[in-house]
Length: 345
Ligand code: PLP
Ligand code: COI
Image (cartoon, rainbow, N blue to C red):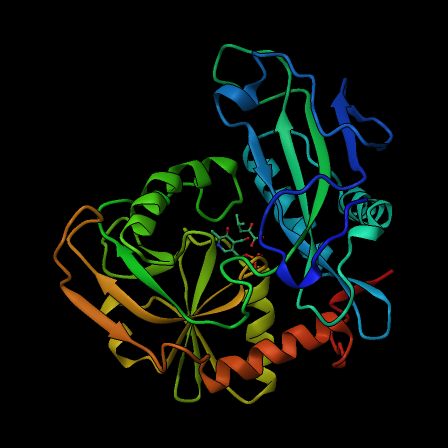
């Protein structure tokens, strides 16, 4: 394999040694196959190409300070994929099959697992796609479940907890009020590509979506949850359109252990003026501090109508820093894992 610079990994797709695949056909899953073929041979009428019969997951494996390999909360990802697959009315892997195939993927690609000390990890990407030929808008009867992985640094920056900026999305929605925001459907991400590009063109690092029914409450960022620190409170949105983030759920537990009060409730946009620290949180971003959030009438507008600032533009807030260190410590095996979150291989 090529020599990898562990200290300079970005969040990019890289072909590793192997991918693990299983096919659901005639009511049963095939035995998982380990393959070095990173291409699929699919019928061009497969549902995934036309109607986005597809969902996915994202989780990470870490090499610990003790040399052991830890996968963070794969059972939670298995459950979330089950909910996404059930929404698409297609077959999905059992929790056991999901975890087994993730473990196989990590073991097969163990040379690509970054060593301890670089802040890097092996990002595992399980994907479920509908593959039988179809023309009508229907759920897929034949499905491929595959697990691939890629060594990654942090999502937005290689420098770790460097704060970034965000813009509120006023004229583009991520999820309809009774839509699919709480599932990890590929279609949700297609919806967000155009507004993301507009936000990036304006120079913002993140895009903050509001509830699409009233545009008065905070939902989440395009690929991560929103969480804020307000005094001794950890505040995060309660919304039917937000993806239930496993990172956020874990941070809420850690915050409670630190003696913070966790408030999961609707968050009016104006409350941004009252937060001490704001972060994006998720598997890829871990915790990414947001130092400024700006509001404009639309993503094509030159007018900034409000600007909210949190802490310093070059430093993570102190409470967020503590939360970050605890979760990363658990993942690296340098902190106790009291809830047994890590699957240790
Ligand atoms: N919200 C969205 C839209 C996401 O894509 C992600 C990433 O998975 C998250 C939140 C964070 O979820 P998790 O912490 O489970 O990775
Ligand atoms: C993750 O954080 O795992 C994600 O899935 C976010 C994004 C890369 C889609």
